[in-house]
Image (cartoon, rainbow, N blue to C red):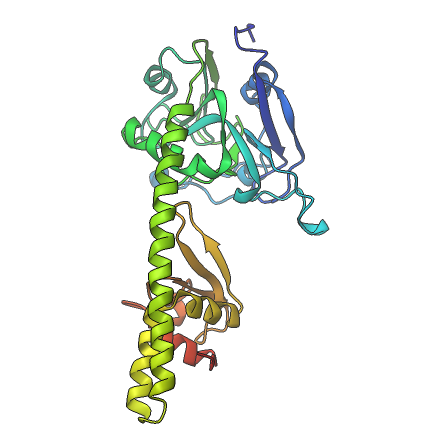
Length: 336
């Protein structure tokens, strides 16, 4: 591949042997020129490729998921993690993102993708199931300054909004991995590189970070208000403990409505874990389901009803979901 003006740009690259493993095969900081050559190199699929399904649907095969994958990120030192958890792909482990990568799966072909980012340094290659009549591709734009991992989701969301929504919107996670340039269904498969100026997202990242701080302050204020309301409800419960079951039940329902810590305790009691989303909101995930016995229940810490991931088979949470107070009783949570 022809040498470019930015080939010496420091560029972090992480390589995976396939899409199923959570641990990387290699990770380090190299140069954009070297990484560009790796990403542009076409490789064979990870096994026999079955015939495509009718109507252009994707074949569910192992050939694709065994193909080499990559991400353009550097990682935080993981010395604070357990030994068996080190080297594992996690969003909170991303230190910096070194490239904007966009997936075009809805009719945007490689040539149009290149034109959308005219003037910028960019590499495009066809996706696994690219066909001339159903074009699919992936474009990679190295960044002038790497973007910190904690603000990447907000930056990516803003890029998608400005870009017009043609790219896949489900790739906000900074630890997201991308399939390499592989021979799959359809074709012809090819990669193209165009030189240009480096894309800078630093100002956008600073703007996103400033908004996140404002949002965090508002959430902290809201949390303090909820905690005060919960404390007042607890005090009222203690003062009126002898007024009968109806009064106690009303106060208990109020506690479940205003006390986020109580909802967290319910989730932990049921074996769930607390997940913080890109917007700072917390959710209980993978808690025990009273209906099917699997760890599939989730609900919001500050609001929302309980629902099982397997609702289509077990029915738990169908419709509007189950009130968290009712879920707490179902899993034997007695503390208030």
